[in-house]
Amino acid sequence: MITKFIKRILRRDPMAKHTQANHTGAPKRIPKKTHRIDPHLLSKNAVKVTDTLQQAGYEAFIVGGAVRDLVLGIGPKDFDVATNATPDQVQKLFRKARLIGRRFQIVHVTFFGKGHPEIIEVSTFRALLDNAGDHLAESGRILRDNVWGSQGEDAARRDFSINAMYYDPSSETVLDYHGGMVDIQKKTLRMIGDPVKRYREDPIRMLRAIRFAAKTGFSLEAATRSPITKLSSLLKDVPSARLFDEILKLLMSGYSWAAIQGLRDAGLHHGLLPLLDHILDSSEDSKEANQFVKLALANTDQRIQSGKSVSAGFLFATLLWPDLLKNWNANLAKGMANIPALQDAMDDTIATQSSAITIHRRFESDMCEIWSMQPRFEKRVGRYPYRLIESPRFRAGYDFLLLRCATGEKDTALGQWWTDFIAADPNGQEALMASAKNEVGNSASPLKKRRRRKPKSASTVSPTENTTS
Ligand code: ATP
Ligand code: MG
Image (tube, rainbow, N blue to C red; front, side, top):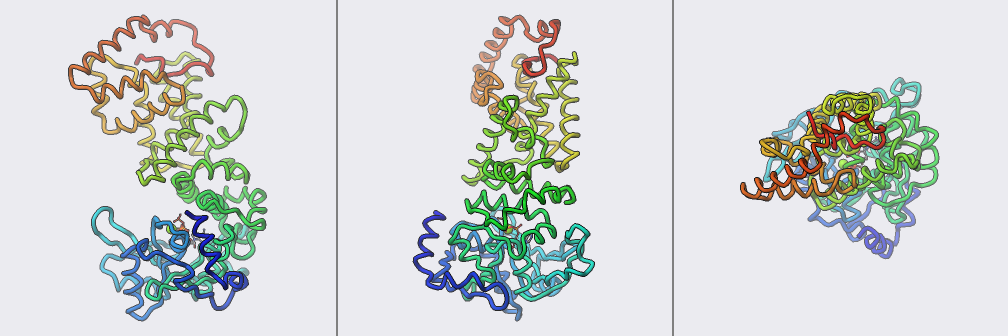
């Protein structure tokens, strides 16, 4: 769809080649017949916000990623508005408006309708940073940032040219300060200004570059790409919570596998998630882990692209599973019982992850529930299956089991048994449990036998084959 659009715009915009040079001063004004934004893709609430601000005498535009997506013919996932009104002035105009942020105040205007509430983020045009001032840390990272500026300055503060366009819904005009339209035509991601300086100001921009390249299929312009590997160590100065948010966006972008490959190619993956180090090295050892994570991410991408929801807890549970499995097996090899071995492995895995980036607590608890549920899928007699099916996170645990079956870590018959059990009536469920009991009987209680044996080596045991405790 994107390619079709680009061909169309190349045919239609006679002035396209002149826009690139317009880096400062007046923006290029792009009319409707050229940008061809489909008004149906606009959020009514975002338009309400720009209309209200304009009627009160302020300038107001839809800005950033929303304009980029609209020009590409994609429905934006959220809408930001930029204005010359100060946060206080914005707040006075809306009933449900909340000032947020300390470093740079913005206003969240909330609209309640059918479905989820929609938040429109309204920010006041930002001033350019003073290089010599005390806004920057020694590394060049922005520390303080609370001065309002003109629209032109605001545009120069944005990251990529394609993210620095302003759309006025009332005149249906796009204002383009940095040649974003031409870059869209050229399928190029280009940092505004000097890329090295911009990455030093905010190293997160390196991760954003990789995420947008994966999402749009655009290439990074040479000067935008080349400093990244050398500057990758700057990421260690970024607060962990911000890094986590960006990683989450990357994983939830619908193009996570491509983005992770992009991180590896740019040498950015080290220290973000231990599992990335692990899965992205192509040794024989990591082949299975690679396979598991690849399938998990492909599933996630597919769900997101088809508009379905994805749980971050589930996603992290899959990404850290290969590490957990390794720790669990190592504990079993040391002679620990199955469940304590799992608990201990969970603690270790989370501690290693936290040394790089801390996963938000609520995702962490989802993740632990999914993991702890796994050995319980082995118990298919008595009250166990009924109790398991009633646990609130059963569905996530079951999906996780299916993933393990799909990658060959568990026998597909186990996943199928649960699929049948969920669908069966009470008689069918009894019959299924009887058949499971026979299986256990036939294998003469594998776990008891195995316990007495010397443990297998860490790399060959599948912990959940061990079904006691
Ligand atoms: P998406 O919402 O699809 O992930 P986006 O471009 O809208 O992409 P946001 O994080 O919502 O990303 O940011 C909105 C806009 O704010 C961006 O388009 C960009 O103009 C600006 N922006 C965001 N983060 C930065 C940054 N780190 N440096 C410079 N500008 C930024
Ligand atoms: Mg956005």
